[in-house]
Amino acid sequence: MRAVNTEPVQTALVNLFNGVNDIRRKYSALSPAKINLAGAVTEPLPSQIYTGKAITPIPVMYYEGEELVFAVDFSVTYKNNIEVGEATVTMHGKGRFSGQHTRKFNIVRQKEE
Image 1 (cartoon, rainbow, N blue to C red):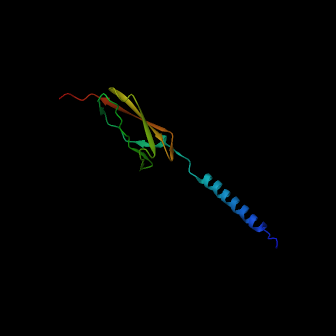
Image 2: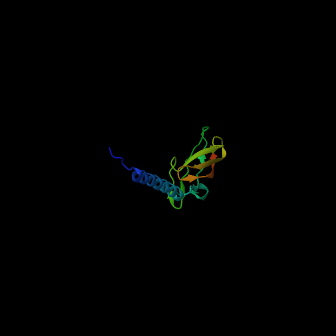
Image 3: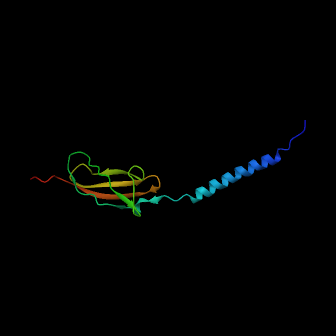
């Protein structure tokens, strides 16, 4: 039986493996940095009517003219959103977004007619 020289195949596999690693390194270097929500714009939140329960309006947010998608681009948390007064909603970046953006809104009693 004749011996087979496998060195060229081994060299080719090593080169292929190194090439894949090079591509991975280049791709990770080209991955865009996360966008900070601090640069986003939100539409004003209208006053909300007091209900005695948590009030949870979802803000409409834009970044460079593009409307962001709730639960994809950002999540929200609320503070002081049950009683009459000033409440706060904080948007937290998700996916390609990072950081936070805060917006205030008012909770008011319904006017008696």
